[in-house]
Length: 228
Image (tube, rainbow, N blue to C red; front, side, top):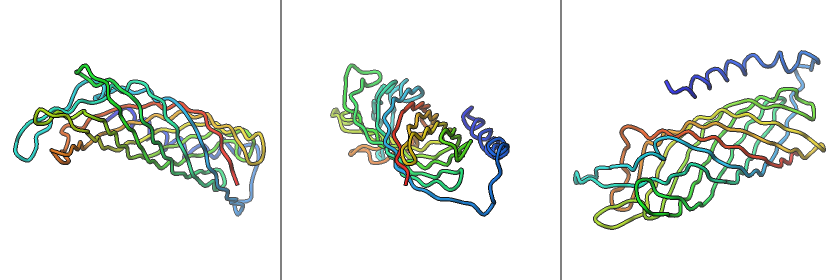
């Protein structure tokens, strides 16, 4: 079992226990379930390591021919993130989006190409110390990621674009500081464990990856949140 999955299990157990920590100083009527909505615009940096950084991919097409797909060495790159969500009492549910293009060296070949990363994810967090102006969020998430790299698939003596597709689980921590009733500064750290199951190019179509490519991402960001 990947270490992160053990961490996610520990996080879930922790979330089951934290209500006592958050409410030991004040009691609220159980029927009091206020709701608010928010949008968060953030920018941060990814730090990554794993299979994608280490070696190119060899795939076999339907004609049993082998081809090389070179992966981008995405050790560090920046990205914006947009989040839309709802607060229900001390819980937050949201969907977030990332889309960014970055120039990256290709693994195992002397070339630099543009790589486009887009990701959509869902997150659940529990906000300790709610409803204070200073809150600490802990939670978990799930996301889908696509990495498109130009001229990375070497097929038939020609280069084509490649598309890596996969999913991931995340541990999420953040801090909300509400300097007004509606606006907050939100620094966050997210730890993703991604598994990439498919790779696609125009010539080969979509090929299964066996074994999966595993990649760990840490995203450190600061955002501004508007709540209404």
